[in-house]
Length: 147
Image 1 (tube, rainbow, N blue to C red):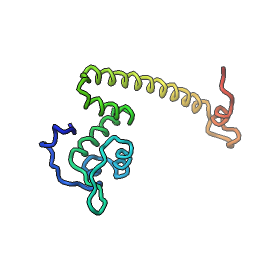
Image 2 (tube, rainbow, N blue to C red; image 1 turned 90 degrees about the horizontal axis):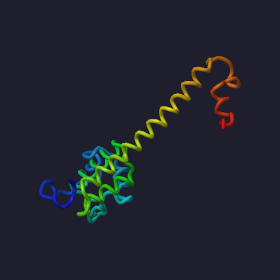
Image 3 (cartoon, rainbow, N blue to C red; image 1 turned 120 degrees about the vertical axis):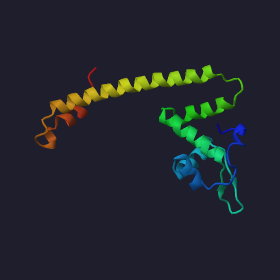
Image 4 (cartoon, helix red, strand yellow; image 1 turned 45 degrees about the horizontal axis):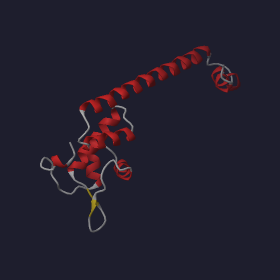
């Protein structure tokens, strides 16, 4: 909801980077970073060199923020943004990418659960007493992995 079709819906007044950051819920440095990375278009500049954003930038930044909250990487978000502008893209294409992200998240959850089990085992085997040289957790981290 940030492409040319939205021009009539948004106020096209010039906004500062601070205003855009505040209204979109991201930091000023994040706005600059997304501009450098090509996630948002380079804004016009005032005669004094200040960036001049419009409300469409806020919509795009909110899209990016929500996509990040769902686990999409910036590379994946960039792809989603470009797919949105591609007339040959279908809803099925976007659904497929979302399903791939679900699979990725499931794998991360499995990995995190394995890490948690390993840490639970280490902490349950540690008495929490004695000197640092007798710490079973540090000893386990120092030891070579089992094959």
